[in-house]
Every structure is written in C-alpha cells, then in structure tokens.
Image (tube, rainbow, N blue to C red; front, side, top):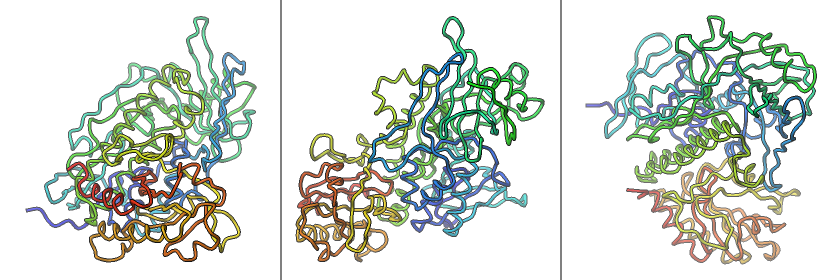
Length: 563
C-alpha cells in the first residue's frame, strides 16, 4: 500500500518554467518540492526574449518591476542583405498594451524567479535527480537521488515535469515527442562588441547567393550591459558535428546544443570571422562569456498529462527560436496548470478540471511549433496577417482559449473580449484617495484567485451584484464562509457617468472608469460583469442582473469540467 502523500506537488526542473510553476503554486498555499539535477544555475544566455504577455503574468505575481529593472527593451531589428539595409522592423504595439518586448539572459530570469520563490519560503533542492516514478489513484511515488548520493522515496499528490527536452517525466509517462531537427548547424555566443547599432535594436544580416538562397547569416540580440549581445550564426566546417558521435543536450527554444568538448566550442576567432563578413560596419568582438554549437529542433508531445502527472515547457514542446516563443510559452503552461491544481487540491474544483490543461495548452503549443517552423524556413513574410496582428501574435497577446472547455458562450457586442480571451489592460481607473490614475493591472496585482469585475453606473445595482457574487464564491469554497482567501475577489468599476461619491457606499473596492477606457476596451455597453481567471483570461461575461446565475454556472463548470 502506498504511503500518504507528504507534499502536494513535486516539480522536476528549476528552469524558468519549473520556477514559475512553483511560485504560482506556493503563493496559493500549495506545498511544493522543486528539484533540479544540476548543482548550480547555468550561466548561459539561452532563452533571452521576454514577451509582453509574460510581463503581464509577472505583473500579477508582483515581479514585473524587478524584471524591467534588469532587462533591456527591444525596439526592433535591422535587416541587412549583402551589406545593404533592406528593412527596419519596429516592434510596435497598440498604446493600451502595458508592456513592450524585452531581452534578459536566461540566467537572470532564473535568478529573479528563484529569489521570488525563496521569499515565499521555498528553495530549489539542487543536485537532486528524479530516477523514476509510479502513480496510482491516490498520488505519485517518486524515487530521487539526492545531492549526497543517497536515494529518497517521495510520495506526493501530483508531479510536474519541467525537466527539458530530455525529460525523465515525459519518458516515464511514455508520451510521444514527434518532430524533427533542421540539418543546419549554428553557433551561439554571448559577447561584447562595438557594433554600431541603435539602442534596443537587434541585427539580422544575410548573405544571399545569385540564386536568392541564403548561405550566411548573423543575428544579434542586445543584452543588458554596454555593448553586450547574444550572437548566432552558421557554424564553420571545422566545428560541424557532421561525422562526429551523436550527443549533446537540448536547451530552451528548440536549441539542441552539441558536445562542448573535442574542439567543438566556438572561440572568439570563429565569431569575429562572421562579424567581419556580415556586420554592416567594421566591429570587434570580445568578452565572450559562453559559446556553443547547436541545431534547431521542433517537437511536441501527444498529450500534456497522464493521470496525476503533467509536463510543461520544453518537456512538452520545443521549436525554432524565431520570435522568442519557447520559454514564454512554457511559463504560460505553468501558470495555466498552477491555478487549476490549487483549486483541485483545496477541493474547490473537481479533478476533471485538470484535463482542461491539455485541452487549452496543447493547441497553443501546436500553433507555436507550426508557426515558428514556418517562419524559420520561409521567413515571417510567409505569415499572411497584417503587421499589427503579426506583432500581437509574436507578443503572445492573441493566445486564447475561446474554443476550450471553460470558455462558455460568447456574449456582448461584436468585437468585445469574450470568455477564453485575454482580459485586456486599461488605464484611467481612479480612487478617491489617490491623486493618480491606476491601470487594471494595478487592481489585479497580487490577487491570486479569480477576480469579478462589476461594471455599471448605479451603486445599488453594483451592491446587489456584489452580494450575488459573494454567494457564488461561498459555493466555490464549500466552506460556508464569505469566500475567504480562496473565493473570487470582487471589484466594482463605476462608469464615468456614475454619481460622484458612488463608490463610498459599495461593500467592495470601487474604481471609477474616469476616461471610459475600461468600457471601450471591454465593450461594456451597459451594466456588465466580467470574471477574470487567475491567469489573466476571461472566464465569463454577463449582464450585471445575471451575476448570480452566470457565476454559479461558471464555478460549477470548474467542479464538473469535462467529467
């Protein structure tokens, strides 16, 4: 007979995805153990792109400011072909989007997330490796090899594999990992250069043969630090893996690193030779922190979970680094899974809710793999969408679950945000005691649960809807209390035309939509309620008068899910 679980969740792999999963679970009161086989954080600038959607997620966790103080902005990219500037791509987003594109080395991302997790009282158990696991109806039994070399049997309720493309968890589940690898090999290096580029701009410089084919490439992405860039380029013949024994390890964004030995580690001279050929003007490279040879892979699992065991990030999907989608997609995997696991562990939702993790996230993974492979092989010009849509998709602001099992029926005017879609940010929300306006992200920050936004001009109607929302929250928590720390949190948004002082009589925080931007961006053409999920997506949209029925129905769907 299996032992009683001593910990709620074991997370294997302490990269950005595993750290995000642990942080999101711990702040919701879930006990976790986070293990990683490596004895220390790797000092490699592998995944460096931070998408605006990820910054929104980190804002709600209280991390966005820390990240922005460490990162550098990405304003755009200069495209050169055969020494001539062909285009200047601007990474422009609509003004209502709160964050822009950024670059931060993966080791810095991991440091920030680890310090955040430590402040929550959880540490990484380094030098600890998952050897095997079994699961049954009551939990998961894992066999660990600890840093001391001994073995430990651990019983948990759930197991999450965030352990990369060679995932022990994925292999233990027997999941397929279909895909392939590009034949081309590349070098990657973290260097300092005096390359003359505008601040915040990257470089893509190509050499094209007479037939139009590309036979040489240099890509530079700015990093924090004066003149520091991550450079990638075609590998020279002397560093090629052709004819050498197979080996290596796959890292984030589908980057499959070769053996860092036997003469295969690029030296500064290899990088300088490419810069001499392809840089728009003479430049010198120095201060190399790290280099590697890699190939690009693309793979995805046939399912993201089996019973009580889940995979996320590179353990579930890898793809070309085009557009910096990999790490960001994995972090969103973790956030999607964490809030659902927390509700199930608190018995505020039925176990079938966990099946929606695969139903919502695997289609996203499939789309990202397909799109990045297409962009890597055919260029971004292969995308038929207009530039605005293309940029929103690269920023991961168009990711949604409108066709998922939790979306419910659309409502409201055409073009308005719908259940399953991203809850947009807005500005101009005011409080009587504040001499400055707030963003909706300010209102949501730190709130780990569902948030009910009740919009209208009539204080009495908003107060009545508040009582209905509280009653629905009591049903969710099954505690007989007033929702407590685990029920939906309620905020009123008063229409611009609401009577002065109307928020004073409300039993919940009341923000005035002083500029009418909330009403415009949410398509609120009358008294309307919105349920925002813990991961920042709309769970429900309803007329204010139907608050009780709408929330009760949505919360009941969490208990039933797809059961």
